[in-house]
Image 1 (tube, rainbow, N blue to C red):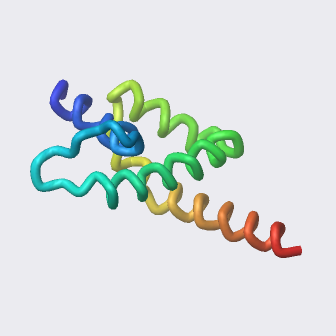
Image 2 (image 1 turned 180 degrees about the horizontal axis):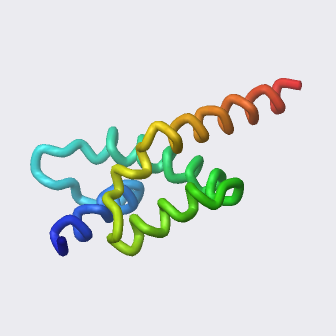
Length: 90
């Protein structure tokens, strides 16, 4: 359990330039993706309590971080990005 909680912080750590990647991992690719994902996720947290609940559970190590990649959350993120893009183009 503790090892899993410790590993969950990688997503946040790799967004920082000062983080040294673990052996066999590519910080640039992982950090770029996770940084973008986290920025969009924070925007989504203000719009839905169920997404916020999942996020809090992962922070408290009561759920694996992969729960943030559930189809429900990914679809909500996609819809939010598409909606914002359409609004920006108008």
